[in-house]
Length: 345
Image (cartoon, rainbow, N blue to C red; front, side):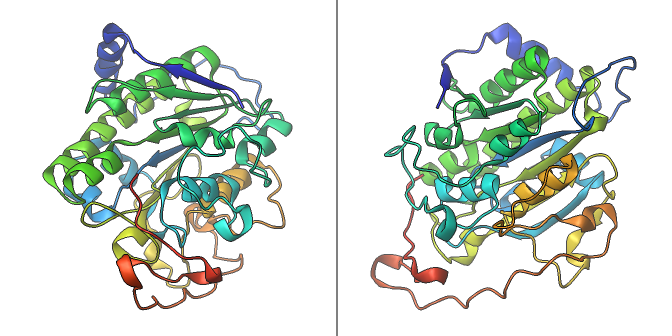
């Protein structure tokens, strides 16, 4: 695993990128830009750690709102049964449940050990000829960075400004490398939730900082003439309540899921399709489907074809197991016999 840490982002770089973000994010990109992609398509996956849907809707978030208007979305997508950061992000980027990938802890204990045995979106797309990149705010997510598949880059800024540092670094990578498959992780709302509470004014403010960072990324894509070729998926790993989150707790379980890009229906609420349940694992399958990369047979997630106006024709997930009675300490039993717990990050 390759990890690169950027401890400081030049102030000038952030200021310049913020100025770019002030322009409309859906302006026409410059013409004359050629690329050599296997399919001419790109994917940008953005994860907003701990972003409960109603908290996002309370934020001003003008960039995310505009993306929603131009895309297909649901604010009732579902996390994994564990609803904690590391296992759920692994599910997001491998398309399988924690019961299959077996990453059920939530720290750095096995970072770089090769313990992850299932393929990631980076493994599969790199093999198909795409270039890859990931920029994260938590080192433990680098467990998914296998050598030769992706370089895991970390950014850290001053307190309360991680979203701006991460966006500045991701924008720099876009300009220098133009990766065709990119994952960007914002930790701010989760950090604010644990410190001040889910739904607190501090967490709402953190959502607006992330939105500002997403505006940076959209401006960079437009500047490079890449936005109209890119499927952008914005989602989260879990929600939360009080100052924590955990297994099979409704406030932790539901997450936003927004897709915008070539051919994607605009201003379409996916809950219009009552048989369609969107899960975090569907990010993996939807991205591979868009890129024309085969989806492994073991995948639990499905390509959300409804974002293109297609009928829901892939298999449906089984109905969720009813919430079990809480155990001592607020724990719950969950599907597959795993025991959940309240997370600290």
